[in-house]
Amino acid sequence: MNKSFIIFPGLLLLITACTQSNSEKIRGSKPLQIETNNNYNVLENKDSSNSVKGNFSNKSLQENSSIKIIESKLIKNQYSDHRDIKIVFKNSGKKDIQAIKFEWYCENSFNEPANGRYFYGEGRFTGEITCLLKAGKSVTKVWEDFSTDANRIMNARAYYVVFTDGTKWKLNKSTNH
Image (cartoon, rainbow, N blue to C red; front, side, top):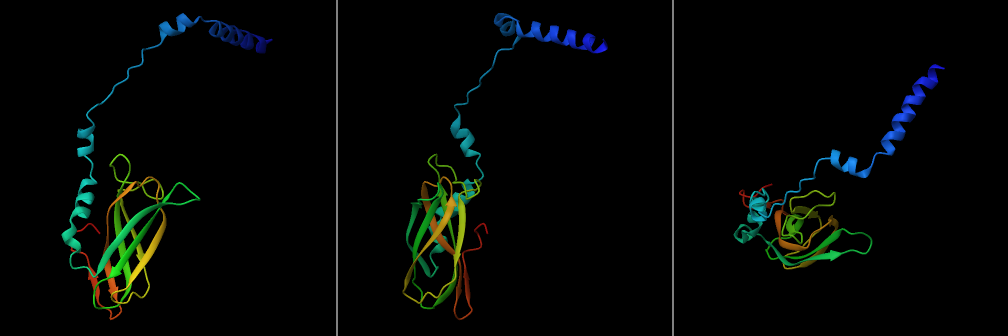
């Protein structure tokens, strides 16, 4: 008997709520406010990645590097939506090289820093290679799945080189490593 006293008011409440007219529901709701912001340039200027991009646009930092980038190209691979990067580079120095660390800066279609493999990135990506590179020789290297939305490479460069004689070269200290 006690259960029926609890169930009956609950059913009555449910039935009246379902039969409430649409106009009553609309009258009781608040209007939706939509705000638009057309000041896109203001938002983009606050982007902290501008310093990273500016650093990559400074070509004078790599003038004394023995690695010259001949070609850098984005490649869409066939098995995923991620992009690969192909870098062709040459040892333009007089010493043989045993290892190189590279970095590159990419942007997406909206001129924003490209995302990385795990959907986070600031446009700057790195890769390394360890192989004997004789003076005057060129090599092609592909790094797979490095970005989800890269559309163009702004710059690619070597930032650390290890020579076979044990000496090392590092990109100018003003870079963000």
